[in-house]
Length: 170
Image (tube, rainbow, N blue to C red):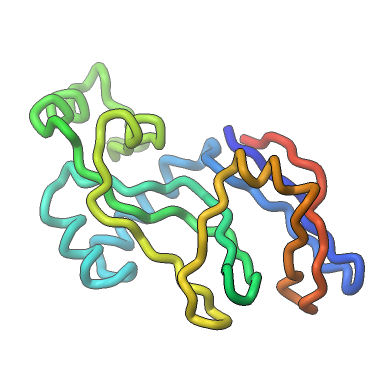
C-alpha cells in the first residue's frame, strides 16, 4: 500500500493524482524495471550491474522527485540497484518453492526486504528534464509534513500550487 495526493492547478486546472510507494501491481513493475535494466534502457552501467549477478535487485518503489533549481517535479520509480548482504542465504530463500515472493514464476524483492537484507549497489540519479539538475527525492513522510507549507510548480502552466489531501491507495 502506498500514499497518494491530488495536485490541481488553480490557474489552468491541470490535475493529477500522485501515487507513491507500492501497490498490487508491484511485481509487474519490478519485472518491467529488471527487464529495462537488463536490456540497457536504464543505461549501460545498469545493464552491466544488473546482469552481473542474478540476485541483484532493483527498487521499484514509486517516489516523488523535486528539482532544487527550477522546482520541476515528477513521479518515477527509484531504480536504484541492490545486492544481498548474504548471497547464499538470499539465493536459498529466493528460489525455494515454499518461501519465494513471485509473480508468474518471476521472483521479486519488496522495498522492505531491500532495506533489511540488501545493501545499495548503485544509486539511480534522476535528472530534471527542464534544467539538467539532479533531482531530490522527497520521502513520503516529508511530503506529508510539507504538503501544507510548500507549493509545487504546475507542469502545464508553471503556476505554484499546494498539493491536496493525502490518502492511501493499493
